[in-house]
Image (spheres, rainbow, N blue to C red):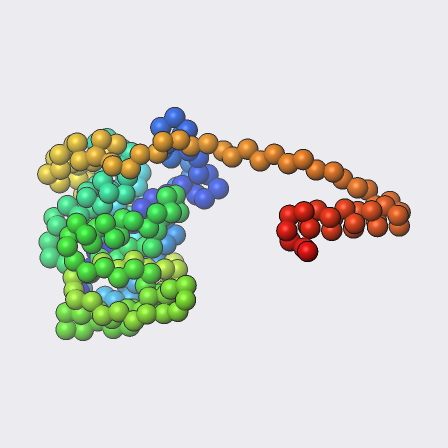
Amino acid sequence: MRIVVTVKQVPETGDVKMDEATGTLVREGCESIMNPLDLHAVEASLTLTKNHGGKITVISMGPPNAERALREALSMGCHNALLISGRAFAGSDTWATALALSQAVKRCGPFDLILCGEKATDGETGQVGPELAALLDIPLVTYVGRIVDVQKGKIIAERFLEDGREKIEADLPAVLTLVRAVNSPRLPTLRGKKAARAAEIPRLDESQLELNPGRVGVRGSPTRVEKIYTPQVTRTSRMVHATDKDKAQEAVEEYIAFLKEKGVLR
């Protein structure tokens, strides 16, 4: 099987900051990691190639230090890596990102399967995988919690939904977005880390992908963040110190009255 895995380098969850003026993430000075859900896509690709043979190419779009996420995937056992990088891509929304990824996938040659994490922790949109399938005009299966079988140009996967599970058969090539329940990602080996450190990772810019600069980055992104702000929560409250039995009874009665006022009790 020829598998492509898309990964993203994201800020540690506790380090996420937003620029209120531009509506974009502030990445400078933040500790970065591979998007946790993408680790499950990497693991799934390794399991598939172990069972069916093949090669795995992992692709990311980001600044030069996004190589760290790619090298982590290589250290786990992926075979090749490719980085889409350049100033023209800065500020890309999900559509512009998917467009760049689709061009990179085409450059990788024929493929059987594209695996993506369900979503990224910095944006929480879950849109890149579906948009990638649309741009490549191939089948899409989302929320995959189990890959059942691959045979004769088809893949059977089980979707994990809120109200149950759904088994889907799709023609290959296809795009699958995977949820956390699909597997437990392995840890890199020492040999894998050494190989990843020495690996050469090609970089592609917008000219090599034959993309018009007006279709990537902020200029090529139809999504607009109009305003970012921190909600101000104001509360008026009254505190009753239950220092004795009478005060305790007063507190209980006041609490019951409050619940009735809000319609919680009748």
